[in-house]
Structure formats: structure tokens, C-alpha cells
Image (cartoon, rainbow, N blue to C red; front, side, top):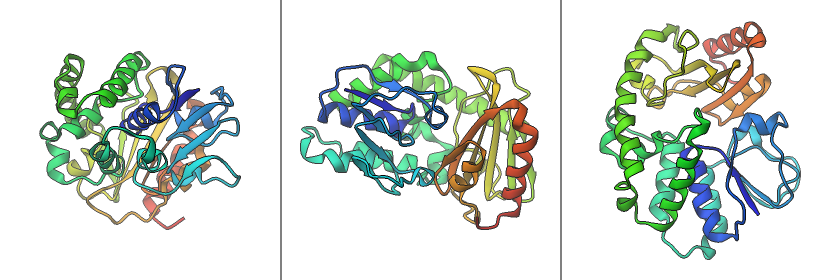
Length: 296
């Protein structure tokens, strides 16, 4: 039996819970949602999918994204919810020996972007938020770190997790990355009406930093579009969209919009990835829809 999930904080917490509840015999398989959607991931009949689109071959499936709403019967749990980890927690609660209430509460809070401006501007003062920022699918070489976190969070109190040498180094580096990211956001973002467009394609390497920061730097925006090349394959473009978590006047269902462009997500946040040859077709349509800001 194998866990298949995505490399973000929600996915890590899903893996922590499933490892305790099930007999997992193989390493976690970390994948991106778009790869599942495009049939690039081989799913086995005893796999447990979490925080990813449904695949007919899996044994169990847990997800909470609007765009992944199932239309066939399945084993597991799907619901529009703050996090997939919360659904896994509910499903397995009677089989868990440790107390994961706070870890799941934080996964809900972070994945739903239920944050204050203080938490966004100063994540270094909020350990769960800072830790979540150290997890990114942008670097495949980080896989040992994701596995390390799953083990730590499943076996140690959170205070001890934050004292781990790898975690401390990652968090210290993340604080510097966030500072650098702020400058790059300001340089590469333009406003079109109430839409903030961040285009990192001119950069040789996509910067990683505080994904909520743009909502503070551009308070007049109701939605942000970030465009970048995939660090692993620069023939692929990734476009991510998020409602401002402070200026709540965006009417677009992001998951529904991006489903037409090889992506998906939640009502208020999502992403799509596509070959660069489609950029001239896809990006103007996405931008126009976001600028019009009409319910879809």
C-alpha cells in the first residue's frame, strides 16, 4: 500500500495521518495535481490518493478541491472543506493514537488562507505558518525533506520538530527567501484594474517565498495571477490564481475557470500548467476573465 499526495503542507499532514492509520509498505509518492489530470502518474490499485484529483485505480481517495468534484462512486471522503488533511483526520479519527487536533487545525487554517495581515507579514513569529512555507513542489530534490517532515510530525511533539536541524535550517533560509521574494514581487507585478499580475518568466529561476504576501503589497487587488516557468521543465508554464484574502471582492470561481486551461483548484485559489506554445491562447483568456470579475 502506498500514499500518493502532493508536496505542500496539507499533503504532508495527510501523509502523517495515513501512515499512522494504515499499514504503508512503500515510500510516499509525491506528485503534482496536473500530472494526475494529464495521465502522467501511474496509480496502483492499492494506492491511497490524498489532496489530488481522483483516479479510478486508487483504493481510497481524499480531496477537497471544487474542480475535483466526483461524479462516480469511490471509497474515501470528498467534501468542500478547508483542507484534505481535515477529511483524512475525520475518516481515520478512531484509528489514530496520537493527538493531531492542533496539527489538523493548522492545516485547515493555512490551506484555507485564513490568515491575518500580521501572520502574512511576519510568518517568522508563527511556527506552523513558517514551517508550511518550507514545503514546495518546485524542487524535486526536496523529496527527502518532505519524507523527513512526515516522520517527524508523526513521532514528535511540534516543539521538537521545530528544533530539528534540517527544519531549523530550512526555516532560517525561508525567512531570507521571503525577504528576497518581497523585492521580486514588487519588481515583476503590475496592476490591471483590480487584478495583480506577477510574471516571473524573465527570471532564470522561479523564486520561492511567501505566497500570501502579494495581498498585502497590492491591497487594491481582489485577485492575483502569478505566471512562471516550471523549474524542472521550462517548456511548461504554470499559472496560479488566488483571491485576495483581505480585499474579498473577487467573484470568479478559480477552480472552475482554470479547469478550461488544464488545471483546477478551489473556488478561491487554483493553478494550471500547460506547454509554453499555448501561452498566447490561454493567458489572455485567463486575464480577461479575471479583469471582468464576473461570476462563472
